[in-house]
Length: 277
Image (cartoon, rainbow, N blue to C red; front, side):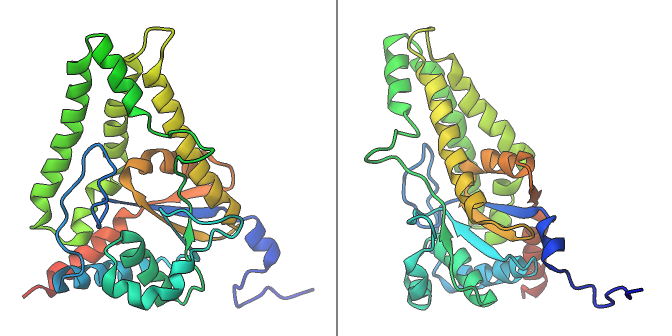
């Protein structure tokens, strides 16, 4: 009779039955690219205070020991590896992108050989994944400008509230609201599903916007699935506008499981508060 493996080590057959664990780390964009309906003006994350806070966040995330790190950048299939990771040291001193400051920093700390890009954007041969212009044109032509303005105003008010708090918060604390799954889902529904009313049964720009936004996020998650292997712990770093759909796929796609980022953010924030003079 064979003795049990006292080491507890898992063989290939054990890992093959394990789900892919996916942590969606929702963020605002550190580098202020200005591509969203509402954009935060972020203070310089290369400043010493913010660098110390990012380092503390990365230490906390490292405790989960992700086996793969994916960031919201485009990359060439099938590998989806980002060539820029080879210049991680130089980029950490110059780039304000969260992909670099969190993703590259963490990957380097963990000894990873690659960071992967999973973004999907419109362009040649691709649809416009956020056709808000068509919704605006319909609103103007059908007396619904105020209705659309109210949706934008709610999103912008939330962004302004977050920005007002930013100076008082650490990086980890500022990400709490971007990783509150229930809160993100409520805002997603109020903004996106409210646009379903922008249509007349023939022209349906609000429904089309929702469909294309779903498509973009589905394609993004499909790239995660393309790379992930059973038993992987995959950290996904993306703007929190994507988080509701990405969390949905992690929870509902067979063989995948969602891991909450919030405990790791809270741990980083607590350590920073304890270390403050």
